[in-house]
Length: 382
Image: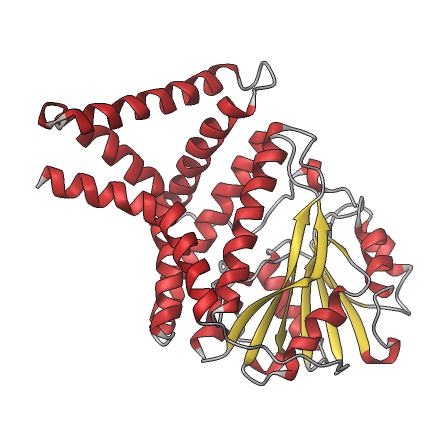
């Protein structure tokens, strides 16, 4: 029984990070679902949620107003979610060019989006974050996919523009390229799992008001997928943002996101039963199983000790794990004192990020909810 559990855990890790990417790539080559595109300009609403965004909000507004789209066909809606800095004063300067929703109390991004959707008039609604710079044609490229009636949600491709600023930013950028790879080939086979809050658009008619504890991009895209519509990536629709430079900021962010993802999943899991079987397969390997990576890693390590006498294969695998965690502990001890080389920082980053992700799930199971947020300071650059 120990051997069976060991190999199930071992191959689960392999499946999540190696097997699944390979299989989804191969499937996309033999089974590709065509996406119709067209140069259309339906009425469009662009929604930006902002809480204390004085450092970036003016540049974000000007960037959004400057997109390549007929001016009479789109509106910009900025929701100030309990801002206490100069955000509201900056928004007042643009009162004739944008719609503003001011919420007196900070109640979180999802509540802000619910409020904005009540005043949005667009047939298509695009969501984007306050620190995200949109390419001039990003929205037009994104909207082109809605010619296809099977498409309910379209995600643009965001890129982190500062990978050289720190090991954290570099590792996060590497991880994000891996995520974009998965999303692209998932999309080629019909649908991807989850939209990215940096830039994604939906048909307004498909929006479901969310609970304030939900994470908006995950809940919105997954509920649309469960209704039988496609959720796709268009890599031509480009957006750019800054990654957190400090590891402490990224860890807090990851724990909050993990908590909200898992809490949202627990709330909407019954609706997700309506997804097609292939979408369930993608969700299981891309999201659900990955949430338990840290538990799988610890299970393999502990069971490996018990299996050392069963053959040389277990000795070799245990030796690899010892080396891997030795590099992790070096990173743990020196990470705040010196700049770590990548061959040390990547094992350190991988383990601690998966541990933080697990802690977010534990928080959710304990009833802890992260509804409001304080954006990482080092990401508030445009």
